[in-house]
Length: 338
Image 1: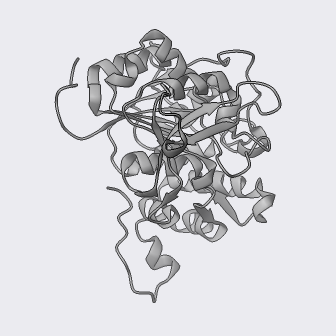
Image 2: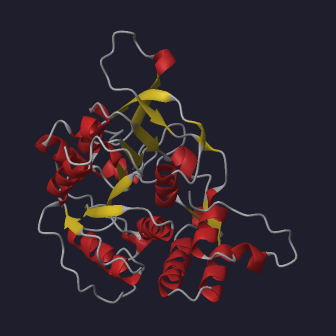
């Protein structure tokens, strides 16, 4: 089982659909020196080939072209690709920016196969971070039903519990894009699954002043490009008067990494409505409300955090951000990374 019986620091595998906030999650993990063993690309914000290309170019720009990028599945488990979210992320997912090409080829294995192989190599130290539709994870489960007991944990950005969805009144985009895959993943007996829904990500953001500071003060080309993408992202959110952008995927990455602790993450059973008017709706039953004879897997849902992630993210991207923002303020050390 490879490193399964060996204790040590966690190893991360990220399945994502870059996407501006996916890019922000990846650069945060890289700035925090997370041990990233692989990236799986899935169709979500953009088509799967574009997602893989975005991941490769972004990793090259951030100085980590060594991290392999595996191409996943284009179509959901049933039906067809939903079309993406170009109105939020731009025509290519990266605000229309043309990043320099990567010289590193894509992984020779498909994303689901690479995930299974990595799980058996790393074992319980492996932590999956799923930031897009759950198609690749569901395919991996079909390949190897022991995956949930092989890996140590999975953190999923997706769903909406008590708040409205962001693509329909009922559904969040990642779950809506492939509700059948989500249903299969939530039904699996993972030893440690944490869902990070809109209920918590809606409360963590960067302001336009934060983005302006990143654009003007950073000398890191990747951070400068991230700021340019975030400025585009801000302009696509009229519901916030273009004044803030939410940190959906970066917050999920920070929770997986341990940078952000949770003060409300109850154990629950999660299911998904797979079709009809409420397609993509996540249904949460807390343990105290569950039938004692239920056989559904128990997981947990992140509902509130102990700290605001925005300042922590700024400190990771721009270590002197607090001084630049408030030069006369008393400086408090921020543990931006664990």
